[in-house]
Length: 124
Image (cartoon, rainbow, N blue to C red):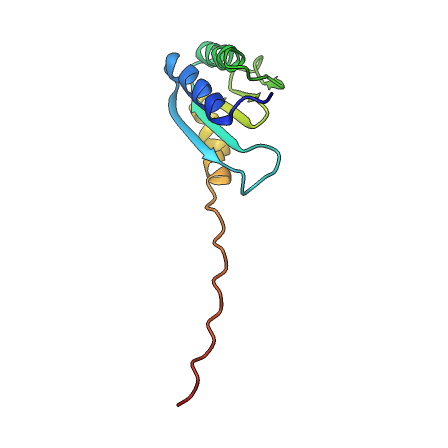
């Protein structure tokens, strides 16, 4: 059975907060892609903290029944991506985060539903 996305999101966010990640942002991106529903972006102050954050997110996700589908970038120390299926977590050092500006990409507003066109009122 799949883990509830709210439970997984809460676990990932708590794991980031536990290791003092900064500027944690959560985006509901279900209206932008069918690949996943949430993107979490957080900042780390050092490569050591980045690695600790990544490990903690993975452990906490597994603890609530989630699955880690993949982890990219742990060796680099600037940016780690953790694929939790319905949630993708990006942990970045501030310069990398500023450069790629993922908030602009994923923070797109939901498209408005088109309003029904009003018929012109009959002439009197």
